Length: 200
Image 1 (cartoon, one colour):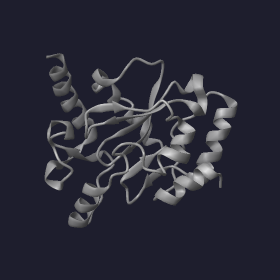
Image 2 (cartoon, rainbow, N blue to C red):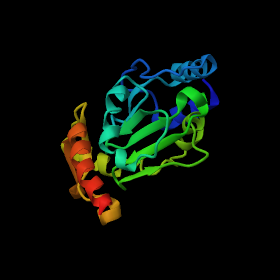
Image 3 (cartoon, rainbow, N blue to C red):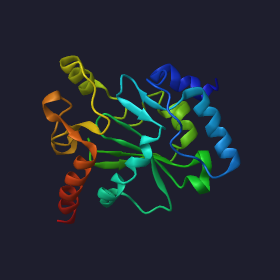
Image 4 (cartoon, one colour):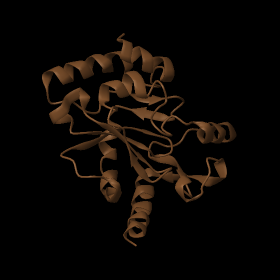
């Protein structure tokens, strides 16, 4: 197992069920690098179904980007490569041109923001940023673990623990500020509201 894959595996473990990869890189070297990482890590649900990475479901989530386009700066390409139980989307930009050093960003409903860092790219997201929990909120299981302990059940494939009042508007990371919603309905409804708010 590569050092990058080992670092992430030590934090998130193996997927609940190993799924096929949900995306490809266009360049041969980039695709080979990705295939090696995938071979070590797999794809699917991790951390008691809190985190979904790299599997086929990510392709379905790309349609969410249009509903929150008011937050997204223009780029040539942008795809979802993962999500967590709160509906935060881990994205990769311009992968055809930049391969495995393509920028990785977070579309975060908790703060209603698009977040990134100039040093955050695909390969070091796996080997550094994710293992060290440096991607804001992405691995914060506090509310999810409390919800799971109370309900003893997992969310449905298209369900999230949706924040009611975002943290930037005074909301808190407490179970009473979250409710189960369909991720597609949530993004559509809140996107329309937040976009109008930003226009004022």
